[in-house]
Image (cartoon, rainbow, N blue to C red; front, side, top):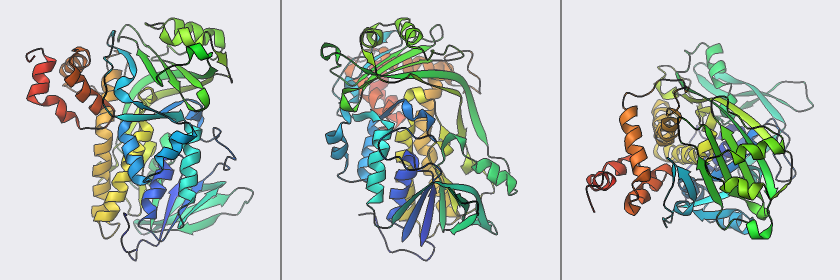
Length: 443
C-alpha cells in the first residue's frame, strides 16, 4: 500500500530501541527499505511483562484517538486483534474528566481511544513487526556509537549480549528510538557537532501506579476516569483505567515534590485526598495484585534538532528521543505513532534520504509535537513552581482554554476534545463560531 521501488540508498535501515516508537518506526521503514534491523539491549520478553529498559512500562498507558488512527494506517486491519485480546476501546468524549474544578460534559464524539497495559501493546506490535518479511528483530544488542563516513552516518557499532567483541552493522538510515535517555546529543557533541537546542520545563512529577481487581459491583462501566486538582492550589492528580483481563490500573501523581508513596496505606490516603472521591472509592475496596510502582519525571524536554545548522545525514530520532512529555497527559505513544506516519510520508515523497528529506521529517515531527507540547506545558505553567520560559501569550491562552473546558456548550466541548485528543489542529478552536459560543455570545 505504501511501498515504492527500493532506491540505491534504501538497502538497509537500523532502528535502535524496540519500544513503541521503535516498533512503529520499523513498520514505516519496512515499506521503503529492502531490509530493516531492529536492535534492543534488553532480552526479548517471553510474554507481556514490563521490560527492564522501560521502567515506565508498569504504569498507565492509553493510546489517544490521533494515535489510534495512526496505528491503523501503519498496521491496516490489525487493531481489532487488540480489542479481541482485551484492549479496552472507548469514546474519548465519554471519559469521566474532572478538571478546572468541575466535571467535564460526557458527549459522544466517535473519537476512539484504546486502554491497555504497555507490555500488552508492545507484545502485539512486536508480533506484527516480526511478521513483516524484511524486518529482523535482534534483542540483547547494545549500540555503543554511530559509524561515520564523512558527515554521514553509515551504521552503528554494537555489542551482543555474552560477547565482549565489538561489531559493526552498516545501514543507509539509522533511527534512534531509545527514549528520553537517548545518547544522540552526546554522540553528536563527541563527533564535533554543536549542542542540540533544548526546551526544558521543570515539573518535578512523581507518580505511583497499582494494579487492582475490583469486586463485580465496583467494576467500572467506562475505562477512563481522570481527576485533576485545580492549579495552583492543588497539585495532585488521580486516574483509574480499566485494561485487559478486567484489571484496574489506579494511578496517583503529584507535582513539585508532592509525590505519592509506594505503600498501599499511603497510596490510598493520597487517593482519598483528591478533590473528588471516585478513584479512592473503587481502589480502597479492591484487591492490590502487585507491588505499587513509582516513577519520577523531573522535567519535560523537547529537543529542537530541526534548528541545528549542522546535523549528520543518515540518522534521525523518533519518539521520546525528540520530545519527552509530561506522562500525566498520556501523549507519548500517540506522538510516536504520528511521527512514524511522518517518517513514512517523507520516505514516500523524497527520492533520497538527503538534507531535504531530513528537514521535511523534522518539520513534520515538530508539527506532531507542537499541539501536545502546548497542551501539557500550558497546564504545567499554571503552577508558579514550574520552571521554564512561559510564552508571552500564556495568561490569555490559559483563560481561553479554561473557558473552552468549562463553558458547557456541547459543540465547543466536542471541538475541544478533538484538539486535546490529537485528532484536529488547534486552529479549529479559533473559528468565529467557536469563539462566540465559548464566550457566551452565540446561543
